[in-house]
Amino acid sequence: MGYLLRLLNEREREGRPIKVGLVGAGRFGTTVAATLGQMPGARLVAVADLDTVRGTAALEAAGWKRDAIVTSGAGDDRPLLTDDATVLTSLPLDVLVEATGQPNVAAQVIPAALRSGQHVVNVDVEADVLLGAYFRREADAAGRVYSLADGDQPACIVRLVDWAASLGYRVVACGRGTKRFPYDRAGIPEEAFARFGFSDDLVERRRFNPQMYNSFRDGSKAQIEMTAVANALGMPPDRRGMHEPSTGLERLPSLMALRGNGGLLEQEGVVDLANTVDTDGGSIIPDAQANGVWAVLATASPILREDLPFFELPGSATSGHALLYRPYHMPGVETPRSIAEAALLGIATASPLPRPTADVIACAKVDLPAGTRLDGSGGKTVYGLIERVQIAAAERCLPLGLASGVTLRRPIAADQPLTYDDVEPGSTPAWRLRALQDQATGHVPTIGHQVRP
Image (cartoon, rainbow, N blue to C red; front, side, top):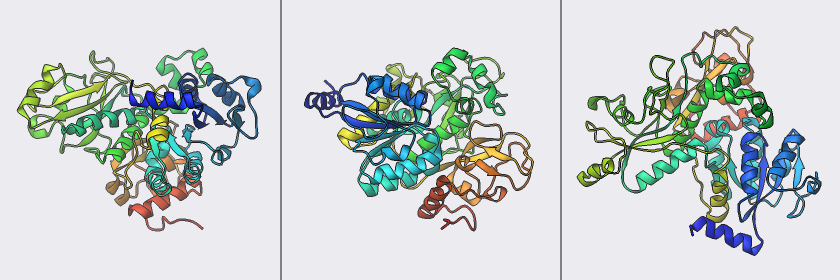
């Protein structure tokens, strides 16, 4: 029996399940709830969502009867449903799961939960790349765990890299698959479901968010997720936006090599992407995997260099690199493992370092006139690209997570990065905490970017 199952079974036998609260009952959150409903040693006892129908559905997915749900108080016998996320931060929970996808909600909820003694599993990668260093410092100060969610690609990539690096392999590059066509970059939310081929029934039944799914198609989500990986591992992008070559598994170890060895890279130890769409812009590469995660390994040991291809890992004869990969990830389904690791072992599946390595900068999707109100990741106005944090700060680039609900002061041409000077400053919790993070880490991007009273 594995160690995690043994500990969970002990909690189940003792009648002391891990008490979990969930903020955000969309598709991801509801899948987390359903998994908690079938696993031993853990129980969803509270949900916060502005939509009570969604919140009720999540609690029912976790095994609760509708007539057991209460709207004030909470206990082992009566699960709580509320539309106020801050209520959950004062409950006697072991772990809080933040799954709203809204950085301003995360900025309010996550620090409060950590300070109250709750561990936090953050599904909201958009908030992590904007404020992860701040959250990590808050967790360390409180003696709590702040973790990204297993099953989402950043945490799955970190697990691969941990396996390789703990065995002494050199990780040349790591990343995930994508499926991005040339016309996807300027895509809008209204077209997202059709591009994925989702039925109306599926969209309504599983409560899909069109802007979130559009962020997958325009490439922003992949850039965000690889920034989370960069900040957890200290591995930067090789260049702005990464290389994202069109490639299958067999060619990937050769491409993720230094230029002197016939590859694309200026340096080793970087994050990148592998696009399943061929260079013709229309066909799919046969051995490519859009949903998988990968790491390209190297070793100085002649024995191990021989062993890796012997075990049928794709490799490069020129560079000696081998490809470790996993062809799937299961968002929400695997996330309760992060909950269990935090509560039972006091460890994070993946967590940003106290100082960030990369940032996601906002770029104009189309020509934007002065006065445009920006609508954030997956919207109609901006998309995101990864950049080294030092460069982003030096050029005063506006983080994608702050490019929502603010107004342009001047026109911006399509594909141009936005700067802090291009927008009217915001006054939201995310803007305030980002200023605190920048000051704490020394990456203050612009004169006058200070914490407001």
